[in-house]
Length: 141
Image 1 (tube, rainbow, N blue to C red):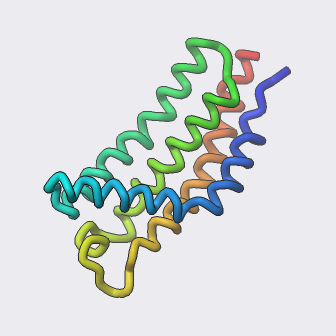
Image 2: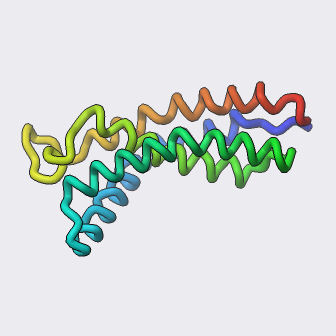
């Protein structure tokens, strides 16, 4: 039986439509906590964008290498990948729609809502990854 990469990813995407506010709140919670450690708000957001960009590029590579090594894709591995990639892409894309200064000090009625929209941008990318994984790993089955 072949592993179905698409169905679990579509389920993750349905969930992803409803949770972008929750993951955005996590970003703001970590910003609040780092602020308590005397890390400037703008520095946090710039660091977050760099980190999430790196993770969003590296995590598919690690996922592919892990599946090639173990030769066994599992639902847990795919779900973990989808969650990490979803959050990483959400943070990564935000840098194109706002700035740390805008998020920290506000202007133009922006209050972090762009993080919700960037999370939705991540969903089609996750589906594309599932198709890539499907064709990449057909020979493993």
